[in-house]
Image 1 (cartoon, rainbow, N blue to C red):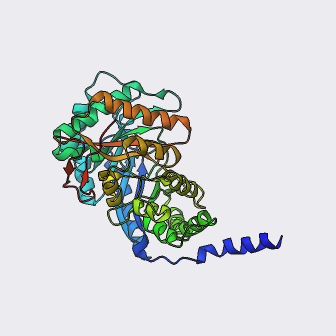
Image 2: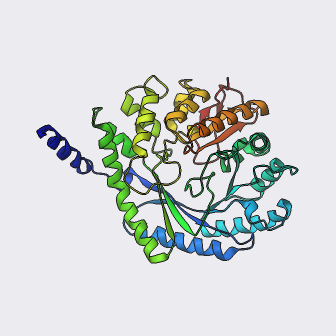
Length: 408
């Protein structure tokens, strides 16, 4: 009994063990979800913009850094209202211009119904990418009711290939993903879409917090230390969010506790600090599983993925280890089995066949269905004119130099 009391006192003290400055984390996104009445419903969009700017001001007044403001709508096909995809494009271009003026990016969800056929989605998606700058979108490849969506897999693969071949460096795929078993109201893009009353969620860039905790050394209480450290940061953010919902009438979806990395905040570095070995070595899988277990137990209202993000070319350490050949695409998917959010910004040869892309997407879809609450997505970067082992650099400031990975 005495030892149990000592342990309880120790765990209660964990939340005060670490101190974090504003440089240790950032609010990656505040994402507002709206239900559009039609493609011309700019009123709903403007209301969301106004709310987001107010929310950003409230967080910044408390010293937080807010990196992006985002809006998600219900799936596009739900508010076409009989308008064809081609006729919808001018409306979407106008929406894009509104978003650019407002400093907001937007996601319009899955482009098509599960069974939709007869329209050249890949060519239309390319036009959308070429005609806009802020619009993100997806295609569903699996859901719990229908399982793997073969038509969705095929069209998603064609869309990735078409966009890659016709945008500089294949970078148009930054705004497109294949979505497997993804629920509404995920704050992160490009998979986001909305359902229900107007609401908002928050995503946080947190790898530096993990690194700081792991530098204290590995011990049996590491999970509790990490959980306490994350709660010390996230609970005050949630308190501001709850105040916003009370004052504004916007419902609060929660915080996506996913460890969203950036070029200056590497999840690869955090994992290497924990394991003491390069990412991809033995023990990487255990580290991924441990981190995700904590992310799903953090005592705040959670939404979205709430898992471990491993975006290869958005993280300098992951990109470096991929270039060293320390992990494969298949191993990335293995890590997703115990932790992650899928395959994200994975650099692949431009000549990768449609069949190979489909097979990768089928694996992602199958894994998402193995666990009914597992949201996964696949944002694959096919790089035109590049083969496995070639170096590639990007115009996008959020992407880092890397080597093209091979596909077995």
